[in-house]
Image 1 (cartoon, rainbow, N blue to C red):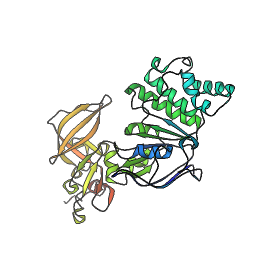
Image 2 (tube, rainbow, N blue to C red):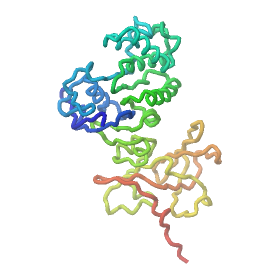
Image 3 (cartoon, rainbow, N blue to C red):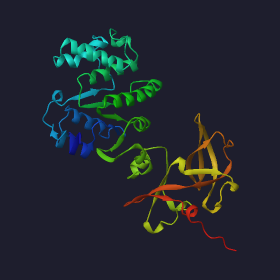
Image 4 (cartoon, one colour):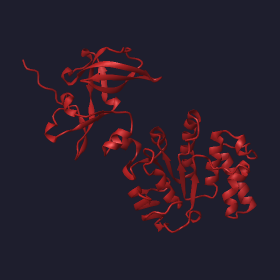
Length: 354
């Protein structure tokens, strides 16, 4: 086990920022800390780096507790969202900074810097200054500088937040490839779920200072363990009373049960499109939003707004149009439990009386 965190706790005055956080990270994995602003993601990152001291708990690298080690002795590379480059230094000198602090030889510095310049796509920019670079290029310099001393852990605090959308998309793929080539254990903070899903091997959902769930992007999306995770990942609609929906009305004995429904779990069509019509609801199209590759459709069912996707290949709907709605499955939860439920009428339709 490369990184192990046990029962980490941190207060800032009266504010309880991190609450009893424990997790493990395998060597070479890229982990995304994902959650809303103020949830504790950056506080966890800063404690790993040694920039903040935990009130309680242990942080171990390779089985060694590092709580009392200063940042420079932890073997950490840190990339900040605002680059934090030295404005008076060239690209070469920025990347070489950590190596010079470690008193590496001139030949070793030259070799390592040029290796990283090549690796990060900065060849030809070595003698430029930060103000002569684009945002994406400056962030690449920041990555190269962090990697130069060969840290055992790379920490990234919202590394793409200050970069425009198009470059941010390109850098996501570049970062994924870079981490795989270098093989360094990495943790990055983000509030962008698309970024986390695309880049990370595993995601930790952080909310109000706690780890809500840790797992692969696929596992977290398909099998959320808490209502917060289910509502935070992906687009979804919350229905306050699941028993109002056909096929999900058999849970009255459990008390108030809410349903969270993802767009891909909803199918729209005419009467003839569904072999089991009794499992469908009558709906009314309220709004259509063009997404480039598909439509996002808002449809009203029993006074409840639901959202779903519709292919451009299918007939274009219109606001006010009546349509049949089949909810294939839903994420149900009450005060005690949460679970994924299939539409029971679709799975086990009512017999036809003759």
